[in-house]
Image (cartoon, rainbow, N blue to C red; front, side, top):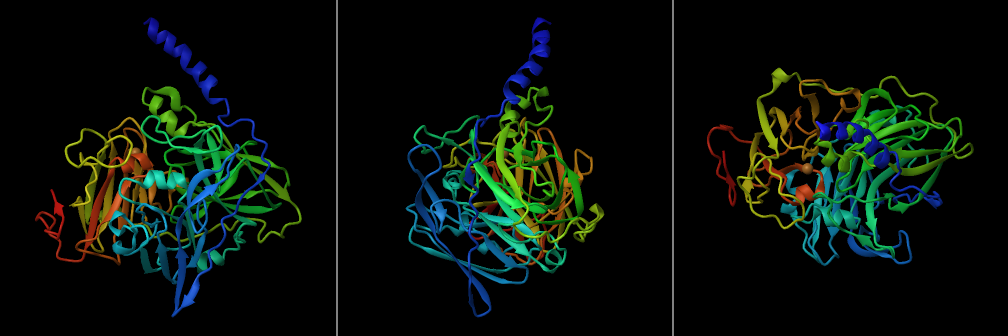
Length: 506
Ligand SMILES: [Cu+2]
């Protein structure tokens, strides 16, 4: 009884003490925001050929010394790839690092052998060629490494880049679309630094959480924008933390896109939650020309349960992110109001599903080898990732409902390769308007069952799998990942399918 009273009194007090304080307070916002360069392709035989070279670098962020980093074609992060739907895309990836790596095209519908998973390893000195047509609609995708058990550290060192897709619809809407001027990519990451400026990798509660925000690799950033409607493309490129973005003056802004495409209509919001791997596009009105801080706020009410003691590390940081300084003279606005309609989204009825598949996150481990990566061993359906085991077999062109059951006390951002999906419900309730569009990564809350629907089209293989996994990178590297094949064959899913070099257990 006495303890209960103490807890009742102390939770709001703790909440105030810990979370009304800005974790990275005291910034002066004096560093110009770095803008990732647009990567110019070569046009060869009707293909757009991009050269990507993972290299080791030395990068100055803060303090006195440079930090040991990795980047694509540069010391930290990578250039932005921008293509149109229908382009024939080629990437020549030459690994100049002294460690294995891969390049995964996060969110994109590509053949499994072009996907850049641990099965497409690039050894030091090797070149990997990834070739596919751009089939996705206009969206903000990204690329990052996906080597077996080593993803977290390589992303932490800086291997991250944006992959922007345009199409006829997106270009006909009049949306702000001048890269780096009124259409600004913001890759949000957090880091721990040593006193002298080196990057520090250390796990806390099973994952990497930092106290210093980098935006496009810039510490202490500001950006000048036109005093009108400005589009921000936000990527949560952090290893583990979820953010809850908004502006210090609580202004309303409009979300126009989810991970994989434009929403049907703009959604007015004043906060947007983004878990690791997720993207949103928003349009903010700076017509009043007033400077404002983009922030990440503590999530309301998250401290109210025992589970949230863990969850606070995922969603409850309080950070200053970026100072935005509108300038009247930069460029005239393309539009002064958003179109009422942005996109058509074809929605499947749940009755159309050929199969319902159930994946349970958390619980006891029953199978899987010890992984090389750091982080806790959190299974999916009891199993840890095994490169030699196929976990799920999907029949080409099937419509499926995936039921993701989170048995653990902590949220997990679930990511699936190959497809974009539509959320059907969370614990039976339909999704909020902010996530009622195409998704490839979604936060599955503690003790929640989330259902999504999708269709597995175009690409199949009897031996090269795609991945699904938690996008907290230390969880992924610890084994919270599984493999699925999309097969173009007579699918009798009750009979075992024998695959060369792999096992499939039912
Ligand atoms: Cu996780």
